[in-house]
Length: 330
Ligand code: ACO
Image 1 (cartoon, rainbow, N blue to C red):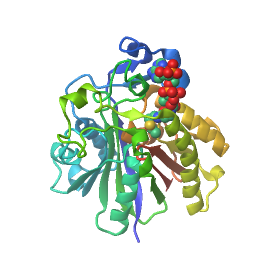
Image 2 (tube, rainbow, N blue to C red):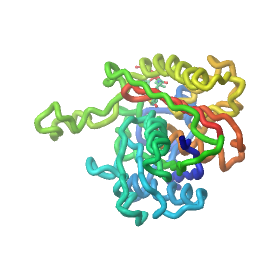
Image 3 (cartoon, protein in one colour):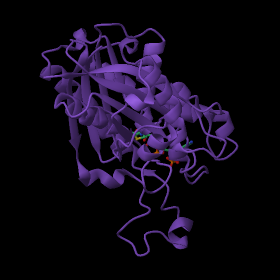
Image 4 (cartoon, helix red, strand yellow):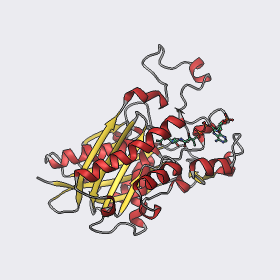
């Protein structure tokens, strides 16, 4: 049976840097508070009329070029995002159009922070069953335009950034491949990290009164998210290791969803590893939700931190709650 190899990676972040000091102009916050509680120094926010699919195209071009393919070689697009260009259709079909691809399958998955790993798992099934050979998997978000950039929304506004990452996945008979993927959810915690509107529970699904009340903005019970994240991250990492008879010391690089530096540090400590093997770039990009793992993976590769034969563990926890992991031999 075929396996799935990552043959191309790429990422793109907007040029516009927003520092913690910049945020002090919009809300009652401080660089000290943000750094101490999240580890974030700055993030990228779009400052022009641009869609999430436009960021995705820029990342995808790099991944497709690295794979030695053309857009017309891609047979399936999976797009992990919470912030698609439109409510519907999703952004995958925008990428199909903008990159001049054939009339291939193209769909979005809305699994927040865990979406990229869910997408890896989905793509792996399509490739292992022989249905396709070349898949483009994208994680991209424009969050800056959907958060409450004010003191009312400061607990969330300081966390999130914009960006896109993409990988090309191809069928292989070789040993460099995805070894396993693991997906979980617990819907009873949905309202601990959510954005309520538009909602089919209301008629109309969105009204001026609801918008005035800020019900379209993401809300989070930070303490509950933290409490659950620091349990589920190690749990799903160990699940990936055990599934492949690997030990923590066999892993060359852990690449977690960039939720909060405090969470990442807590997980590293729980695993008994140094931060040299736990990739972190939240300091400069913030939390880019579905884009955070493909951005980190691409940046780590570009910076020479990933070598042939390396064992990588990807792990994510987020809205849903959902959590997931993947074990990869590079
Ligand atoms: N600047 C200054 N003060 C702030 C800010 C801010 N940006 N945001 C909140 N505060 C204040 C609050 O008003 C509160 O003040 P009070 O005690 O006088 O009322 C105080 O800080 C603590 O507020 P909490 O919301 O309770 O802050 P908490 O201690 O929970 O820390 C944080 C917030 C850092 C988000 C924390 O909950 C956390 O680390 N959560 C982990 C979850 C996370 O980071 N998620 C990221 C997105 S989800 C994901 O990717 C999995």
